Image (tube, rainbow, N blue to C red; front, top):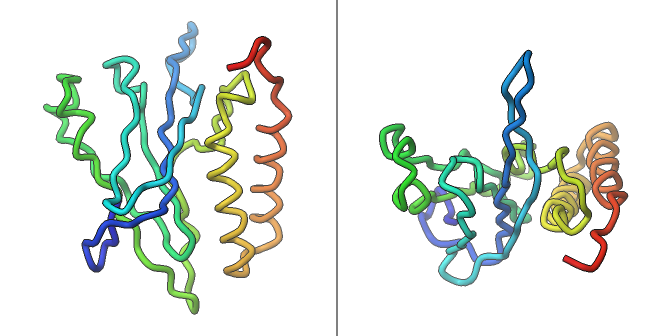
Length: 169
């Protein structure tokens, strides 16, 4: 996690890894977010998430948010590295953030399906809820539109309304 302009590490950014499942039907093959895991970066800007399967989906994507910044696209490995699904496919995936211009704010705050619509349990989306709370705070601070703010609130409410897993996590 680093500042695009200065190339310095960013401390305190909230990073979320999204874990997906494949869904196949006679009509289509698709995927959806099933679970999100999150963490804040330390002084060195690093983050680490477990790779559960070498399938390109677990995790499929990593995104980040930090007040005062907006997201740039993550750096992905070249296709030939990604197809091998080895350690190199999951390391060195830097996330640049750029400082917000308060006169012309960017609304690009995170990439991908942070909403995690395929989740079944509240525990699986706690990281997504934290991410969306930070985004909501930024939308309000930057003078976002009523529709966007309401949409983020509804996403948070939807994820919080999922049932809790019986017997804990």
